[in-house]
Length: 330
Image (cartoon, rainbow, N blue to C red; front, side, top):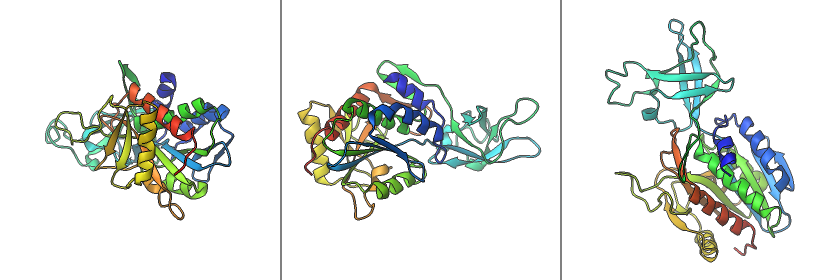
């Protein structure tokens, strides 16, 4: 599984440009799906089983990044705009990678002066892509933030754990189910979550499920002086209660809790006061879809050092496999 995690988190795929990640995932899931299609927005939709309760499982393929806007004529530095929820505090000295493999470095005006103690506005930052004679990237091209995947014991560190680790949970559940389920499952690897849940909204309308589960990362409350919440790294799968976009129906929440308890899976309850998931978009599709979420605890979200615990990942896989592999009576 770690090989798959490394492959996906190091892949290139900012919001709206998920084609490379989609190809990798499609190759992984092909043996475990009864049908695979790509919808007009770019979501990868994989059906497993047929005729039972229709359940949609959503994990987003995209990651935050930047879009190069124009090149300064005098200096050659590139101005850019964010793709998704970019943190200005993390930008200085950050490396970005364009699809053609060019690596750029983000800098800011006067960062040793006024910029030392204050987060600069986005207009003060620029990207250096010069090789000594010419620029190696052009305006109108997207880039991701770049850093290698690393391991520290049970802790896995990488860019784009949000939400490639959710994709891994879905892929591994498909592998363990091996097409054996009494339900009609739609594993949907969505696009453009970071810019407004766009893929999930379209896929939710198209699939028209009876029930939906989003897979995504969540913050933790176990860091020094962090916003307090019950979720901690290493505490097990996080079963969502509510966030800023979703109030999980009690029946859905209890269904997840009961399965975790009956299967002996460590779990914790997630109440998130900042952020939401694909479930927020799916829940209002057509006449409405009862929706919940399984969250992977993650530190340092939206940085290149997003950190998860392999034991939490395993707990999420077991929970999703148990939920989707048994008859649902909701």
